[in-house]
Amino acid sequence: MTVRVADIAAAIEEFAPKMLQEHYDNAGLQVGNPVTEVTAVMLCLDVTPEVMREASRRQCNMVVSHHPLIFKGLKNLTGADATQLMVMEALRKDMAVYSAHTNLDSAWNGVSHEMARILGVKNPEVLEKRDNDPHSGLGVIGSIEPTPKLEFLRKVKEKFNVRAMRYSSQSDALVIKRVALCGGSGASLIPEALAAGADLYVTGDVKYHDFTNYGQQIVIADIGHYESELCSMRVLSRIIRQKYPDMVVYFSDDQRNPVAVM
Image 1 (tube, one colour):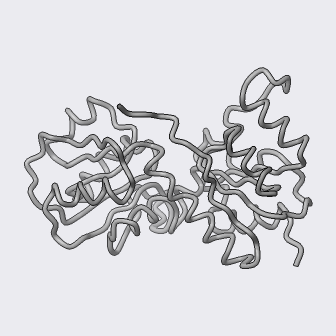
Image 2 (cartoon, rainbow, N blue to C red):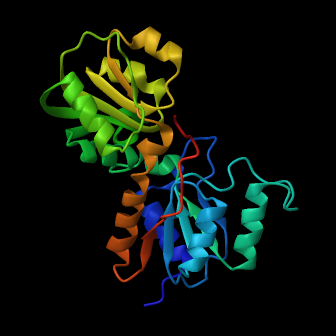
């Protein structure tokens, strides 16, 4: 069965329609010919030179990422920066690059739902509904068996392979029953997590004043942007393999967290 770039794109967009993306986003086909036959797919969080080289080495002619390669647009193509160089390399090698970003975040069973699945959160509901649709929007909230706070925080750290997790130390909560989650930069949803009755909120990119403003009312766990969204590859893999079970799909081994800790 011939599977083309447009077929992979259609499968992803059936699950996560592009209409769900935020206004600032640039989801969809970034580079490549829609009618090109796909030999194999490389999945990643970010498109980097290392990922591109790995895709070439593994004979993948389609890269599917969560974060868009082209985010703010290109006014020229001269090789002046890393993005331009990667676009030029993809064109030279006839390699397609496709990204599913905030539409994958807002889709039912998308990134935040996968985070919930990893932590065993039951009966997830959308945290911030899109147009009052209970099946689309950012973040999720659900229940867990009552668990001591520190025990659950250790579980979060382990399950997401977090080297240094920041959390609100001023909360006097002892037991966690309701958990909210949002992949990526989810600090703006802290009030929604509070209003929905969450005892603990897991996300990334939380600012100091988010901790001071809300940390007494809810346990905030900042696991990092990269760590919270690596699971997007699992969602994308499931979409592609369910539709095209014979398609070869790889998770990138060469991607790296751009943020290091000491």
